[in-house]
Length: 286
Image 1: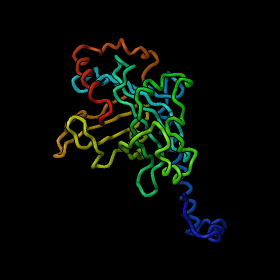
Image 2: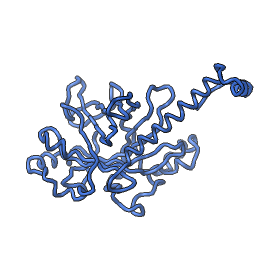
Image 3: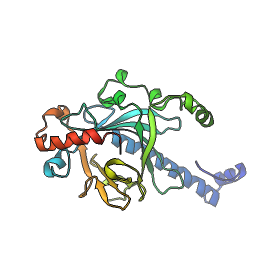
Image 4: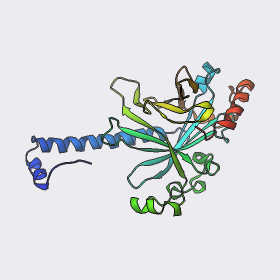
């Protein structure tokens, strides 16, 4: 929101755009517009697809072929799930090994909204757990009439005032569950490959998978529609316990011909055995 003085000072700023009040108001409106446009642009990148109009399908096949010892062949999907009353967008996010796309090992909701005014960032990207992951498996690949409804995602929060919602929290049911992480994204400087880049705070967020006590995430959204994600877990002593060491996962837009992920040439037996262990332990613990 744009903050200013009284009605009379607003009136004065209209007649004298060079006054300090007028300049502050105008600058505030411009900045608000840029932030909203930035959020819309990021949302478009996260849901752009060559296979379906409303979702993005990205794969790490090329990276897995270059370095199969450190990176898996993963398919990542995102698509719109709901919209909050304040205009924030809720995306469904899913990752699966390409040989078993029907069995995602990670499912999340992501909320995309402009950063709070006091933070030096443009877009806030927060992840949330899903209460019933089975209900949302392959959500993006389903026809719209076979997906859970937006009101199931966020419950009645769109219909009631905040204080009333908090009072009736125990009466309401909705599928978006506890907050997990938040990544603060900024527009990249002119001349860089990326459109947005950012990370969690340095201290990260609580995480208990594989002996970790906390985790950090870094995200870059590139101009060529790639999304790079680097997630790592650390124990109480700061030792790295999970996640790639060499660099982020590089997800690239999947061609339309990649729909049949079962027959990827990179589904070799050694990697499959490791994937099975991850499927059994990584699902909702990070």
